[in-house]
Amino acid sequence: MKTIFLDLATIHGTKSDPALASASVLTIGNFDGVHLGHQAMLKQLQDTAKQQQLSSMVMIFEPQPREYFAQLKGDPESAPARLTSQDEKLTLLKDFGIDTVVVAKFDEAFRSLSATEFADMLTQYLNVQALVLGDDFRFGHDRTGDSAFLRSYGLPVTNLHTITDTQAIASGVADDLSDNRISSTRIRELLLAGDLRMANHLLNRDYSITGEVVGGDKIGRTLDFPTANIELNRVRPALHGVYGVDVVVLDEQGAVIKNAFAQLAQPEQLGISGLRPHSLFGTANIGIRPTVDKPHEWRLEVFFPKFSGDLYGKTLQVRFLHHLHDERKYDGLEALKAGIQQDVADLIEWRNQAQ
Image (cartoon, rainbow, N blue to C red; front, top):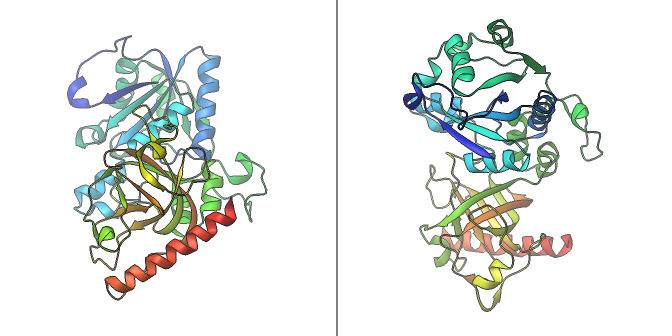
């Protein structure tokens, strides 16, 4: 998959270069989560590209527009929580078989484009020949552009209507398979409520977060529960609380490294195996750690029972398996330690029953 990083400051007046982008059918959006609704759009994109003998192209935005506007207001946490970081999104789109992803820098210059300037950019710089869009898609300054404008400009547009549960799949996983719209907002609400089962149903995969292990404040070590502090790569996460997880180590290409934890572990401290191959079971806290009283420091910390090894600098993918409870504020560090001990015991018991 080719990735094009689009910054208007670097392309002003530049014409399309065949080496940059082949003739393509394009779809545009945040694609946060790459959920079943997005997947239906991507399938339509690929079908249209195949019919027209063109490449498939997806345009996403960094930062996402609502993140940009929240930053302008000086309140970045007012933007919706991220389901997927940029890298996670790119990996999912690559796995789906998309030929090219355009990562457009969303800034004042980009948001100020007129509808005509936006269409000119698509055709003259990105070599777009046709589009697949949602029926409510808007673009350009003050959202003045739409599918009708693009057709009048000369670009063929295929519109895909909103995808609902029953349109996407017919499955007995959900308790209530209504005609609810599949959206990133709905999945955020499910994750925040700890409903992994339904969120995973709408994502068509298990929810996970990928990040590098970085240095923390070592509070867990003082409590005899040393944790791996994993970069979130987002302002705040979409789920909070205490979870049972399984974790794999990824290489630079995003592939799972076989037996990685066994190679990193100290003798006789190999940990507890996870529920997928080459993974280690862990107990995770994701949130603001209210007992530590650092309300704006969102953290993902994973403790690996019966494991000891150096994980700094490793890229870990954390798959969330079981929501135990929301974050709790304890009366001091001793109470916190006792709470962690109970959480670890409860989650190991869940793990043993789940195998």
